[in-house]
Image (tube, rainbow, N blue to C red):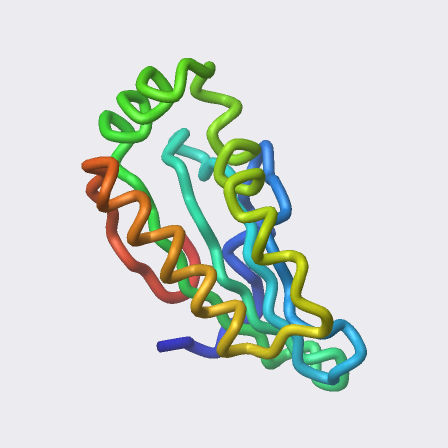
Length: 130
């Protein structure tokens, strides 16, 4: 699912909102972030990085079709630029887990993508940079 790369997808996102991360005390950490890419598309990124080996980074992301994300913002009654914040806020209960592992973080990513599908959002799963 993950490709080795030098930059994480979230490194290039704008207006980011933190969703969840795995246990920071481990050498490998996975972060979930929602934000916008340079084309203004909504992106939910799952980034894996290694504190001990900075070269070993990988990313997978759901990139939401712009039209569908704009419709989502209208349904939620928020401006488009608030979507990352809304997604992160919708995952508050996931942050209650103490020292979550990778599987837990990936389950949260899956939950977000399932909610996007339930809302009628089309998206593409990508690995590596956008």
